[in-house]
Image (cartoon, rainbow over all chains, first blue to last red):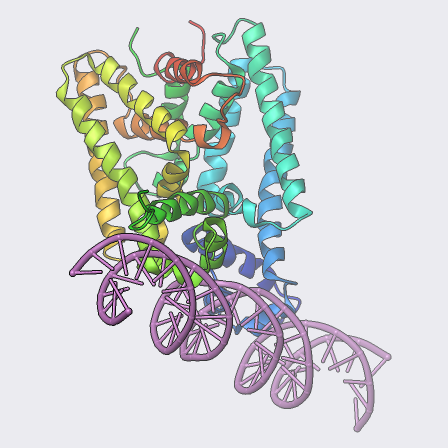
Length: 194
Length: 194
DNA sequence: AACTAACGCAAACGAATGTTTGTTAGTGTA
DNA sequence: TACACTAACAAACATTCGTTTGCGTTAGTT
C-alpha cells in the first residue's frame, strides 16, 4: 500500500489557512486554530511550513501570479477591447467562485505581508492594474468605450467584482453564468434605461 | 480661562482609533499603539473608554446610523428614482471623503464586533440594503432602470463606491465633484459606447 | 485650607501569541 | 540489523496582548 509519505499536508495547511484567514482575518487566526483545523498540533505544522508569514505569502502570491499570467493571455488575443474587458471581468468572477478563500485573503490580508514580500506584492498588483487600465484606455481611443476617466473605470470594475466573495454561495438564486452576465450588463451598459 | 477638564479626549481617542484601525486593522492595533498616538499611556485610556471593543462599537454604529438616517431622508423626497440613486451614490462618496477612516472601519472591521453588537450591526446593514434595493426595484417598475437583477445592481453600486477609500486623497487628479460625476456616469450609463 | 473628582503613570496580571526544543514512533533503504 | 528521514507530540520559550490596581498630581469646589 502506498503511504501518504511525502504528503500533500502542506497543501492542506494552505487550504485551511485560506479559509480561516478569510473567515477570521490573518491576525485573528492563531496557529493553534489552524492546527486544529488540519488535525495536528501547532508545533507539528513547522514540519511543513516555515512560519505563519510564509503561509500568507504563499497564498497571496499564488493569487497574484494567476491574475498576471491570465491578463497576459487576454492581452495577446486580438479580440475587440469590449471582449477583452468582458474576459477580465469573467476571469475575476470565475476565480472568486473557484478559489474564493485565497482570493479573499489576497484582497484583504495582503497588508500583513512582511517586507520584502509586501513591496513585491504591491508592485505585482500595480503591474496588473496598469495592464488593465491600458486596455480601457485603448478601448476609449478605439471608440469602443465612453471617454470616462480611466482610473474611475478601472477601480469601479475591480471593486464591483469583489462583492461576489461576500455574496456568492453555490446553489443560490443566480448561477455563476447568470451572475456574470448580470454584472457585465451592469458595468458595460449601466443601470439607467435609455 | 475655561479648563479642558471634562475634556474631549474621548473624541480624540475615537478619531485616532479609526485612523489606526483603518491602517493596521482592529487586531493589528494594540492599545499601546493607540495610546501612543493619543499621547498618553495605555492604562490611562481606561479613564475615558470602557474597553477596546467599545471603541470599535462606537465607530461602527456612528457610521451605520448616519447611513440609515440619510437613507430615510432620501426616501422621503419625491424625486425620480434616478435622482434618488444618484443621491445615495453621492452620499457614499461624500461620507467616504469626509470621514473615511470611520467608514473604512465600519466596512472592514465590523466582523470583530462582539455579540450582541455584531448581530445588531448586521441587522442595521441589512435594513439599509433592503431600503436601497427597494429603490432600485421601484425604479425598474417605473421604467427608469433596466430590468437587471436587483441584488446585482445593489452590490455593484455599493462595492463600486468603496474603492474611493483606497484611492482618494485630497489634491489628487480628480476633485470630489469630478470623481462623483465620473462614478455616476459609469454606474448609470456604463462603460460601453452605444 | 480641606475636600473631591479627573486624569495621568508605573507596575503587574493572566491569557494568548508564534515559535523552539527534545523526544518518540514509524517507515524506507543499505 | 543499522541508519536516516518524516512527522507527530508535549512542554516550554519569550513576547505581546487587553486590562486592573494603586498611587500621585492637578484643578475646581466648598
